[in-house]
Length: 288
Length: 352
Image (cartoon, rainbow over all chains, first blue to last red; front, side, top):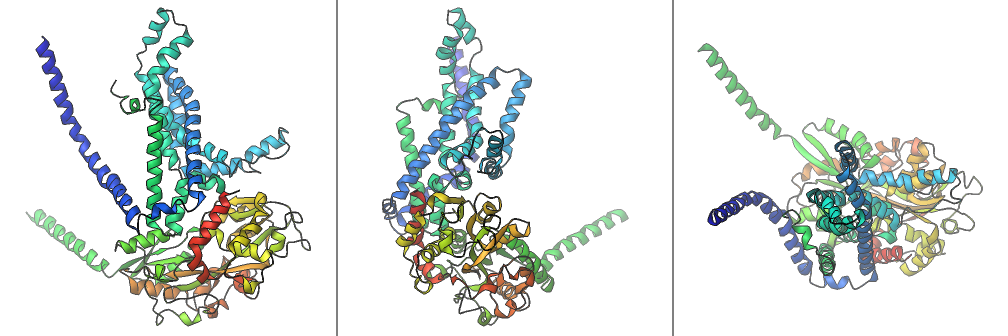
């Protein structure tokens, strides 16, 4: 009986190994078009013309300031997307099939239009004599138009608009995996709904929260179009600086060094974060 | 049997046809023109590329945009040049750091001697194509005739001329060329002593209008912000301001302030269609065709003979009409000091 169970499990595992072969094309593509260029870029950052490329980053305060601003903006986007995305995902989870479909379409639909178009739309809405200021002025809610465009606020609004689906879907997926009998079980054991939510549901959905936050944060770090259109010079993000270095100054080695610094500081930030939360859960929330 | 033979014959014929089509296509050459896109490239298609293709049925012109110096450099380094002719701005194509990526211009094909060599630096590697300008643009409803800004000093006088100032944000040359010159002129530097630019002094002058600046994400937005009233003045390309004037916006230019620039054509080193690219370049700057686009956009030809054929409809907005006013950008200074100037400018932009 026991040996039969073991052999079944072994068979299952060897079967899984064969299925894993299907990942080979993906791995090859990632290796050839992602890992290899990354290695080449790292090499170029120390050979074109020399490792002094990294010293350039200390030659002016702009590099550190833009890097710090990039992390602040990415961090704000992550928090705001989480605050908006978690209740939204919960609503999708609890809604009936029709409402769930509507909520899903509502979050996916904007996903199909380009970031550029959506940034231009925000430009029209947010500018000093734009739509929103026009309404507020004519409703006598404000006396002078507010200035949001060309600030970090505008950048964060525009970025959250684009990043929200990246937060909602991992959380929604994690919620769907939670055994629906657990909450009634907690109630039977005497937990009120708030306590059942806090002690049972939220902890079980955390892997989705980590996965969503990780994706949003990493993607946000590399944003270019939105800050370029909605931000002012002071809300510049690091990718804009890299683009200037490569496109305008034609300093490919220096640009490569800056890209490596961005990747390295992102990894460092994640290492620090993993001391406080179990980020590892984000990677295996599928294999519960 | 007979049917089968017929089918076989048809198959052979179609095979033959299939073979002959690529053989004919070999005579056909396709070259790629890359510019900055927008209205200008649309007009270039209408007035240069389409008639050129009619005259040279064996040459087909493909187009790409936007222009990107880094891509140009990368494709030359990789030995895989897919752009055959490229339209560039004033800060590129001078000095060995750039010319090593470019083909030398053949002046037996291109009418080099007519391209205003005194005003627009034509090196052996780039062809002066058209004139453009950064000009003070203002709203005529805010500043009616008699009360309009007269100089860059007025542009920097926010007390006397209130309202936002539309300036290009894009980090780099595009946004820094012109405004730094304007700041120095406003601060009282005589035009003849403008170069070398005193970056510190220019940026100190810029401090005085910092809180009034309305940053524009691109060239179009620069003029658009004046048209929408977000700004009352701006330092924008004359062609962009013209577009909004034409569509009825209350916008005018103060030509006393004009800062002349030029657009150039270059041919990336290692193009497989050097002969055809040179032919097209020659066509674009030729006496007969160069002025074509002035029917619809005020970018005058650099060709002095063609300049006389410029359309009067856009003449008032064409920098070529205002050659005796304002100053010309010193391309050589910018080519030599771009890195330093861009860094100082970016630092200033961030330090607000």
